[in-house]
Length: 353
Ligand code: COI
Image 1 (cartoon, protein in one colour):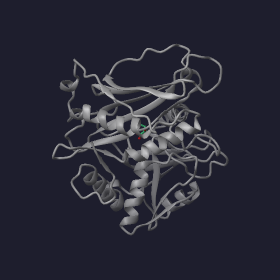
Image 2 (image 1 turned 90 degrees about the vertical axis):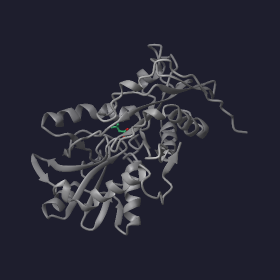
Image 3 (image 1 turned 30 degrees about the horizontal axis):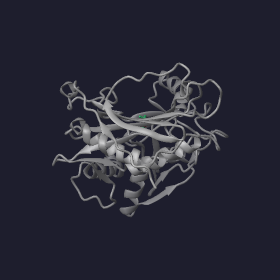
Image 4 (image 1 turned 180 degrees about the vertical axis):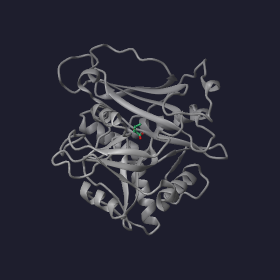
C-alpha cells in the first residue's frame, strides 16, 4: 500500500508579502514565505512539511557539494482573473524530475509528495502568485544528496525542497546567440537530458566568453562534430524552416515542457512540426536564403524569447524582426490566454490549485 504522507504546515510570523511590488518583478530575486521540505533516509521518504522559508544547516561534507547529486525543476503558476491559481503542466515536470533522479542514482519522488506537496505549498503561498499579466509564480523543486561522507557513492540521505517566488520575464529583449563550436554541453550517453545542477555549472564559462563578445547566450552543438544544433542551455530552440516548425530532437537535449506545448499547439493548428536533427549549415543557409522566418528560445523561465541574431565563425546571421513573426506572436498570445485562464483549456494543461 502507498505510504500516506501527512503534510503539516507551519505558518510564518513574518510575511514578506508587503515588500513585493508585483508591477516591477525581475527573475528569481524574491522568495515566497514558505517552503516544502522532505527528508529521505534509511530507504524511504520520512518527514514532509511546509515551513517558513529559512536557511539550511548542512555538514561541510554534504555529498552533493562534492560529487554533484543535485537535480531541479522549473514550473510556473498563474493567477486567473477570478483569483484561482493554476500550475502549468506540473505532471510533466514530475515525470522529468524522476527521470533525472534515476540517471543520477537518486531516489524517485512519490507523486503524493511532489504533486500533493506542490499543490499544498502553492495554496499556502497563493498570495505570492502575481495578479499581473506577464508575471507568474516561479516554482523551483530540487533534490540533493545530504550524506556527510567523502567517499564517491550514492548518498544515503536526500532533501527534496520546493521554493517559489513571483517573477517577471527572464529575458526582456530578443537574444543574440553564438553557435558554440569548441565547448560541449552534453555527449551521447551522458546527462544532457536530465535537469541536474552540473549541466548549468559547465555552461557558465563558455557562456561568459560569448557574453564578452557581445552575445547573450550560446547555441550548443553536438559533442562529436559540433555540426548539429542542440539547445541554448537556459531553454530549448525552435525554428520555422519554410512551412515547418522544427526543434532539435537529440537525446542530449532537455525535454522542455514549454517547447513540447508549443509543438502540440502548432500541430493542433495544422502546422507541420518536426522534432529532428538540425545542422548548423541547414539553419544558417536557411537564414541566408530567407527560408528561416522564425527562431526562438522556449523554456519555463524564458517562456518564448525571439532570437534576433546568430553568430557563427565570425559572421552574424540576422533573423526577421520579432514583430513580423506570425507564429511566435500568435502562439505566445495563445499560451498566455490559456495559462491565465482566459480561454478554454482544450489540452487539460492547467492544474488548478
Ligand atoms: C527553467 O526554465 O525553469 C529553468 O530551469 C532554466 C533556468 C535558466 C532558470
